[in-house]
Every structure is written in C-alpha cells, then in structure tokens.
Amino acid sequence: MVSYEECASSIDESLSEQEKTAQLIACIAGEVSVGVDTFFLIYAASLVFFMQAGFAMLCAGAVQKKNVQNTMLKNLLDACGAALGFYSVGYAFAYGGSEYGGKTTFIGNTNFFLMGVTDYTFWLFQFAFAATSATIVAGTLAERCQMTAYLCYSLMLSGFVYPVIVHSVWSYNGFLSASSANPLFGVGMVDFAGSGVVHMTGGITAFIAANILGARKGRFFDERGVKLKKPKSFPGHSIALQVLGSFILWFGWYGFNVGSTGEIANATASVIASLAGVNTTLAAASGGVAALFANLLIVERKTGEATFNLNFAMNGCLGGLVSITAGCALIEPWAAIIVGFFAGLLYLWFSNKLCQWCIDDAVDAIPVHMINGLWGLIAAGLFATPEHMQNVYGSSDNVGWFYEWGRGSGNFNLMGCQLIGILFIIAWVTSLMFPFFCVLNYLGWFRADALEEIVGLDVSYHGGSYQSADQIKTEHLDAFNKRKKEIQNSKRRSSANNNGTEYEVDEEYGQAGGSVDNIVSN
Image: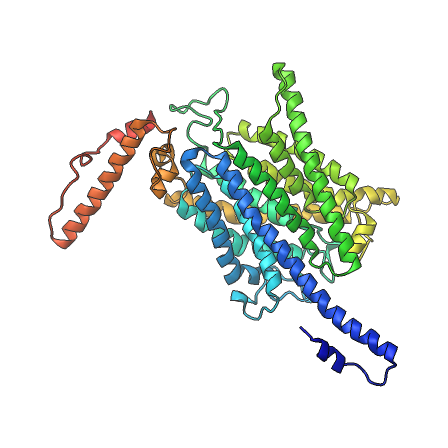
C-alpha cells in the first residue's frame, strides 16, 4: 500500500497549493478504497463460507440420530475437497487466462495451483462459492451414501464440473458471459450471484445422484418390494438444529448476494450492494410465507384441520433465497417479493413430485436448489430493469422481458440467453455426473451396505456408540457385530496364511454365517 510519504513525493511541484492538496487526497483515497474493497470481499467470503455451518446444522437436524456424525463429516469433507480441488485445478479452469477483450474459450488454461495469481482475495471468495455448490448434495444423499463416493464427488464437482460453468458464465472469455466484450445476443446470460451457476448445478447433481443411489430402506417400499400407499417419513432428530441452520444460511446469503458486487468503495457499487441486500431479505420472507400458508390451505382442504408446517416454511425461505440470487441486483424490491412467492410454491410442488417419483431427498435440497435456481434465472430474464442493468453491466439495451414490453418491444435477447444458459447447465452437469455416479455405483463405492444403513452410518463408519442409537433394533446390531467379527477373522486368517503363522478365531462371532442377510431382509 502506498504511504503518505510516497503520495507526497509523487506530487507535481509545478502545481498550485490547492492542486497539490487535491492530488495528495486523490492518491491517498485511491489506496484506501482498495483496502476497503479488499476487506469487503474477504468479509463476504467469510459469510459465504459460514454457510457451511448452516448446511451442517440443517443436515444434522434433518437426519436420524444414528447418522449425525457421518453427515457432519461429509459436510466437512465438502469444504476440504472444494478447497483442494479449487486450489489445484478448479480456479484455473474457471478463471485461468481470463482477459477482457480476449477470444472466447470453453475452459480456463492457466493459473493451476494458483501460479501467477496475485488477487488472492478473489480466489477466496470464489472458493467459498465452489464449496457451497458441492455441499448442496450432502443432505440429499444423507443416511445411505459411502464416504469414498462422497469425497470423489466433491473433488469432481468443485475441481472440474462447476469451474467450467463458472468460466462460461462469469469469466470475461465465457461464451455466455454478460461481462464479455462481445456478449451473446448483445447481453449474455445474467446470473449476478449464482442461481444457476451455483445452486442449479448442485441441485441437478443431487437429482442425478438421488436417482442412481435410490431411496432409504423403507421410504417408499416395504421389505418385499411392494410400494407403500403413503411414503414413510424419516423425521429428523432435531428441529431446533434445522431452524438454526436455516437462519445461518439466510445470514450467510448476504455475503453471497451482496458480496457478489465485488467492491463497495464507490457510489454505484454501494447502490448495487444495498439493493441486493434488500431483495435478498424480501424474497426469503416471501418464499417462507408462501410455502407455509399454501401448505396450510392444501392440508386444510384435504383433512379439515389447519397445520402449520415448520419444515415447509424453512425450505420456502431457502427457496426464495435461491431464486433471488440471479437477479438480486437487477430487479426492484416489489419484484423480489413476487419471485420469492413463486419460489415457495414451486418448492412445494416439486417436493411433492419427488415423492410421487419415489426419489428420496432427505432435506428437500433438489426442489430448493434445482427448481428455484432455474426459476431464478427465468425471473431475472423477466424483471431485470434498465436502470439496474446499466449499473451492473453498463448497458440497458437488452432488459427483462416485461420491461421490453413496456418499451413497445418484443426483444427476447436477455430471456433467450437465460434459456440457453439453463440448457447448457443441464446438459453439462448431466453429461458428466450421470456416468460418474453410474461408475461409482457399478464399482460398489456409492451406496452403503444394507446392514450398515440399518444400524446407522455412525456405528458403521465412525465407531459410534450403540447406546445413542435408540432407533436400532438389537437383532440388527447383533447381526452387524457378527459380520464385523467375521470380516476381522477372515483378515486374520488371510494374514496368518501369508505369514505362515497360526491364528485364533473369535469364538463368539466366529460362525457369523448366513443369518445376516435374513435379518437385513426382515
């Protein structure tokens, strides 16, 4: 940072005293603004990363007690995997070689392992986004996914799949980028903070994974494989943790949306950031109220009894937050309320559709992130105002479709870019993650063993206490212990044969044998 002395020494001595003073102040102010912008972005990155705690608390409260530790570790692995993946290759694929006015490229090709990177603040902010995209899947696959598969997926998504989408939409050289010197259709795809780039990407991945992984045992089918008349619910063990997680996510979303301004030390940036914060608040509130009361009306009409469902209210808020992320700095506050309202309704509708399709999503992350991420991109194409488009992207030639009608024009350029962006994200994620999860499933690395799932992944993978697993039947624990001892004896036998030594078989569990499969099926 330039010091006072350096600024003073750079002043042109031929100027008048008044001009010298003005030049000195301008020099110092310029350096201060850089520091303020840097702190702003670091603080925003911290808020976004704190969302990991929100996801962790939400997932922990939504799962059964026997799977809490496993769920927590997967959330931690998301952050670890995203950090390593985004450091090594992810950032390079996303922003490597990004240069305003350069040729359009599909993927970045420089700055691997942060070589040549000088703006570490920007990397930190973008890493927090990558970690968020990876974490979305954590709740969907809860209670039945292996640890190995989860770490592999986290590295794949944050290291390659997500960065290519970032490059296409947010870098100067992406073919969909609104910041490009020659944007698609003269405007490019507008996704200010990531409804599509972050949330839709994670949501589609969760949707694919849930289809391949299958539902939790007993969720939609009985032990004979007959479909249940009504899906069995698996209530989470702590609604308090779920509410805490939801509030933490809402709080962190201010870093997500407001922080995407990128700077704060000028008048235009302040207007953009303030509007983003207001719209974030209103959309979340509207989504929560819409989901709560829409469900209330539906249940009251079906049963005659009014029921206020807290889970629907929480996820409605999160759906509103996801939907406003694309256009938070581009639309008016009244429009944010409309966007959030429809987000709450869309969440309810698609959550019900997942149950009809027998797709098990433990925390409803798919309707919250995938469907409302898609809706957020469309909403930005409908409601983006000329004034805010000018402030954010420096042009108001192509704006939201409703405002184009107000101009007496049918200009579909912005909405066309939004739809192309949606199709690109769906195609890119599906073409990579579908075969990826199929391979994991084929290798037997994806789904946890049936008996491990029944006794709980805390006991199976982490040596959890049996005493805390009050939902587990004694015969299932006995079967699990017998098989565990059988595996240990088999390893001892193999080791002894290789070393030419004798071995001892555990007498209590040495004949674990074939009763385990019968117990699992029961």
